[in-house]
Image 1 (spheres, rainbow, N blue to C red):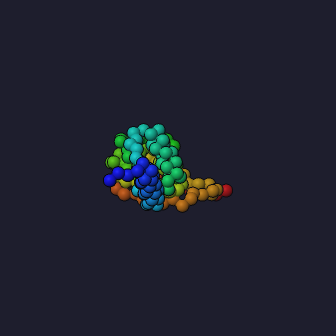
Image 2 (cartoon, rainbow, N blue to C red; image 1 turned 60 degrees about the horizontal axis):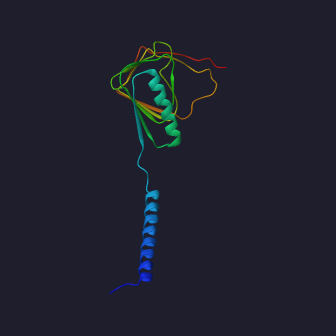
Length: 158
């Protein structure tokens, strides 16, 4: 049995329309499906590396609030000014330390959810605020972490 060219053309057109509809349906299903949790991670070995990773963690948390940011220390780090944390981030010390050399606190956690693990913070010097402004809704946790030779000084109210 032979099929006329016009009937064949109609069949091909119909198959293309069905394929296009199937493609649109599949696209709609995938668009409606929940996205997998996106993760980013950095291995840091210097104070500058840690600063860059925290800045990127902040950008990631603003762009994708559900993102999981993980920063791992490759070795111990020395710092002289605090790192401001305003992101959802896990900082894994891997048994290493951050030595603040009595200059400042290690972290000022302003916002986000922060988890510290396997980290020692040494020689920190936290001075309280002067009663102006305030932080915003931060949550922090520490597991298998320690503070050594840390000191705090009360702030002055204005």
